[in-house]
Image (tube, rainbow, N blue to C red; front, side, top):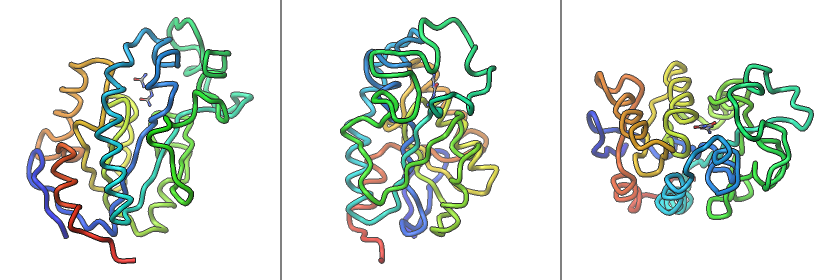
Length: 226
Ligand code: TIU
């Protein structure tokens, strides 16, 4: 076991039974012209997540940790998108509409895919999810069970939406989650701050929070037994 400093108290984990999860680092959310921007958001705050997350991804790969990517999106006929999600709000573009990066949040479209810097390697699990949480209507739990994973290091966007929903789902299913503060991002600075605080409050009510250098420092001497 490795123990790293974290909020609200040190997080202990074995890299062999811990997965790095990258939530929805998709062009539609992170890059200009995507779904996130059509909702009226400033995507520059999300772009700052990419360099530290790339460092964590490189380290996790180097030590042989399980790496899991998720993507939020829908099948082309949108049959997996509930009307309540499709019709929500007054965006200039809706899910399924043609956008500058292809149809918004539709699987197989350029904008739906993960940014180049964090592109999955062959053999890394990619979970396509129709909802905000990574467990809802996916095979994530079965994949984790098959790999003997009991803890998650959670990263990605956005902190208060898909990261939070996933951490809450994982917590209820018995997984211990460490959320990396500089590898998660929100379009709203106050949501980033409060979103992270909510996770670690009340003695780690949903999980732990730490900066990525705490994880990298602890992992560098490690190599996961194969
Ligand atoms: N809009 C927003 O903050 N997030 C999402 O719609 N999805 C994710 O968080 N991935």
